[in-house]
Length: 226
Image (cartoon, rainbow, N blue to C red):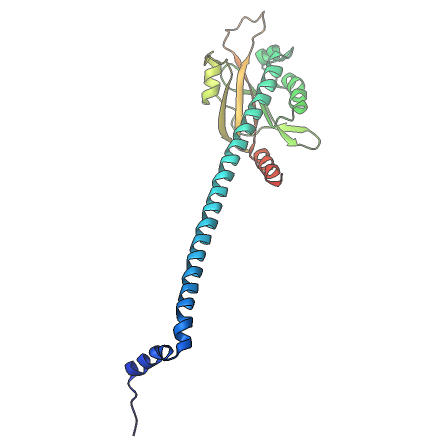
């Protein structure tokens, strides 16, 4: 014969058991207070840690944006120096007019290597590439020919230069484009025609480009270490 023990009465007796002893009546309020304080402290600490992590993440995003912006500005300044150097080098205008890629290579590549420019292109008055080289070996500063499409006439900055536009800051323009070597920021400016040229004055275009993502990451990492 089985005996059935009622569950609810036994559970009630267990819960009321501490109340039968004076020591439990003294300890219980302090135990509840300790649990309440611990829970409140845990909640506050979690909120503070979460807020600190969010603030740190936002600060890192702002710092990364600033470093990237500064890197792009410095890169564009370097591009402008290369553009001016190529456009004003004696013989470049005549070689561009004659469409001589070999002469352009002998004149432009040393300037590109001196500035460690990653991509350099010289275009004719229709936006067709006469010379295009990229930095194939950064250690030895060796350049190789660019192998993608030679027609740059569809690029906005190229059209602006070929049409002789001026945006109020100058006649040079920048643009981010996708190439076979990845995304790059290009800077384009006019190459003056030879004085004795019988051809129309539609300018040629000299373009330089560089990928800045690695430099930006390196600068951001250096700032984090400091």
